[in-house]
Every structure is written in C-alpha cells, then in structure tokens.
Length: 257
Image (cartoon, rainbow, N blue to C red; front, side, top):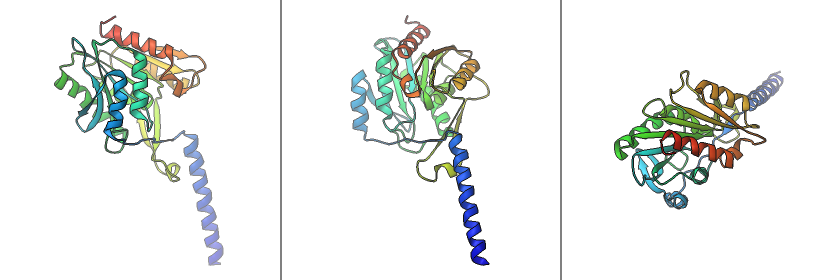
C-alpha cells in the first residue's frame, strides 16, 4: 500500500510539474542571456564609435563626450550575452553627429558585475541620469532603449530628460535564470509603470514582435508609433528605417536638426 501511495505521489508531482512548466512556457518567460566579459572586450567594441570605457557608479559603460555643448543620449540594450556588441551595433546605425554625447550603460550581469533584477534596473536608471548630470554637466538628455532596455530608459525619462525612444517594447517582460528549473520558479517581471513620463516619445515595433503590446506602450506614452512591416524583435535594433527614424527624433529633440 505504501508503495502504491508513493507511486501515486510521484506521478502527481510529475503531472503538477509538467502543468506548471507548460503554464510558465505559455507566459513567454525568457531566460536571462547575461555574461560579464573582460573590460578589454567592451573597450574593443567601443572603438567602432569612438566610445571609451567609463565606470558609472557600480556599472560599466562606454562613453563619447560631445565635441561641443551638453547634449547627450543614454542608451540601454537588450537581454543578450553580447550586450556591448549589440548595443554598439545600434548606436553605429544611429550615426549621431559628434556634438551629441553618447553614454551606453551595461546593467548588472550584462558586462557589469552583479545579477539582473527589475528593482536594480530602475534604481540604476536614475543613478545613471544623475551621474551624467553631475559628472558631465549634461543639460539636454534623450534616453533610448531596446527590448529589456526600454524599462530603464522610461524610468530615467521621468525627470530631467527631453525625450525618449523605445524599440521592441512590451508592457511586461518576464525573465528567469537559465536552467531546467526556470519554468518552476517565479520569474523577474519588468513592467511599464502606472504613469508614463511626460516627454515626447517615439515607439518603434516590428510587425511580428508582440505588436499589440507595442501599440499599448505607444498609447500609454502618447508616442508616435512606427511599425516595421514583416520584421520581428531581433531585426528591429538594426533595421535601417528604425535607426534613421530614431536618429532624426533624437537630433530633433536635442535641437540639433
């Protein structure tokens, strides 16, 4: 009898685990793809755009000071183990003039020491904006983010920023630490806030990339929405139309175009 009860219990646990796993899988929980690589690798990526390594509080960054004036772009990339590489790819595509300073920030776990978390991302977003104001005398700032990077870009835009750009948006992004237990654990939840930042905004979304959520984020922001026909999430960050439109918007709001 004990053996029968034990077998039933094992089967019940297996079924419950399968149901939980399927439930979580249906909710699109994404694995964190983080990695902390040597600083020399980050510096090598920055050379493509004249960016130099900089320490922003506890975070690593790549920075190019403006040739004149005090206009800046702060950029956050997405969930990828090639964080600096992919982010620099996008910044190269923006082709911003030399009189716009550029600060690219790596969150904890993504080429910065530590582990990612929604709370940490929001806290660091404010710290980065304040650091740029205090250490570089930034007067006009536009924030921009791709994928998971939209969340710090939006938090930082709540004060002291003239505009924001979001690419590949979602009202909710759930992420977990990779491994077979990922779908059994509660994921980290990155969300847009109840109240949007009161700044001009541009939203860019691939037609095949959670378009309903992209529309919702754009409506929440009161943003102009550009939909990229036939494109998914990954293609958005290097699409020529997306990069051209984002660059024009950034320059316009920094009064340099």
